[in-house]
Length: 197
Length: 430
Image (cartoon, rainbow over all chains, first blue to last red; front, side):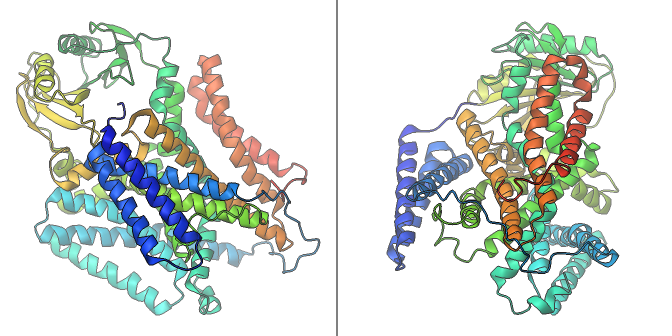
């Protein structure tokens, strides 16, 4: 498939995207935060995506617009880098450790690592799966089209899994962890049970 | 993890997120690198296939009548097949192929069968990216889990970066090696986020859909997982095995060409051919959409029945049908593929820079992980080296084409083991 786009709207999308990136580049270079500049930059990027919708189709146009914006932004990063001389120095390795070097892993540490892997892998996955299936049942119960509820659940599963993994690794409050990791799957299990029954 | 709670309770969110980001990165980078590298090359799989098949006959177009002849010839060659797929030639892939359950054969412009289709290296590459060369149903889930963890890396990375917008264009090239690597890692990650987030999620969704379908099938449809996807991809009609003439494919193609001339037929799929219950689908691409193709359904006489709804059905159908093109950058010809290739390289560098930052920090603290670093570099250079080696071998010695998998993994293991015994000279500045 060749790239099929409307040339006028493509140019408008390109222009608006580059302008938006330039404005944001300038705004983020300033020490003082300029709300107007930031708003103008984001508005131009949003406008660019609208032009791309007309240029390349509703869903496909947005995807094309995002690609162009990403590539443009990387050019600005490259420009920013080119403004400075490269530092060729290599990383110095300290002669003596400033901290206690890591010891060879004990059985307890290995066990703990395996526990973490099992928790973040199968257990978090199972919890995410339960919640996604609960959402599927809930959507089914309120009369959502099967195709929509199924695809929502299919996408929710990996998203929830990643969020639960991140939450478990970041959060330090056991009470919060317990609340989220127990309540959400229990609620989902109840929904699945009601749907199945 | 749990015991660290007291120790890290007072640490700011960003610092805890960074610690989580590090932990995930160290755990998954090596396998993720292999999946991403093979994925980056897989974006160009059509071009590689064409190159692998460069000696074979090209077909710029296949008329409806020639398509009918091709299907008849395919049935003669494999009379017991339950499906006939005809890969229609397009501007990008000027090959016509008849595929049955047991054979895949080129056809010429008149529908006559040619040599059997063979593209061993592309198949090897796709098998690596989709399944890591593991048994398919298991490998697909394993790869999907790495997609989940790549997305988790994006989440923790974004949370760990409170000045994400303020620093969006900062690249302090004149600073220390660690700062350079951190800036490069962060800038590439932020500005390619739409790519790696959409790719990790679509990849994970594709792989985990098998698990979800099995569960929904068990809960809702007496264990029949195939029924689960019917609301999205449509249902096959009831089987009627009574013999019948081959479906009128030419008439169906004429219908699509006349009524939907703005679309491009990609595949003709005939289910249960030469039976009274045979069922014909023509998958036709909508060039201005992200959907892979709309499926136009016909009966055995070639009469139009309906469409599945990928183009104008429920939003869930349209989203599900868009997953493939979004994952592989197949929605804008070579320019989009090149952009995806560039984003793929950026993702590989993000992974590599993340590991470099880890090694630099360890070296600066006085306990460089020299062996681990050499092992990492063995993966970084070993994967492309072994992919190139397998490609060259498949061309130069077609007889080893069936052994590409053990050659790749065996070679990678040798490179990895070799790196561990290599003298420690460049560990800190690789």
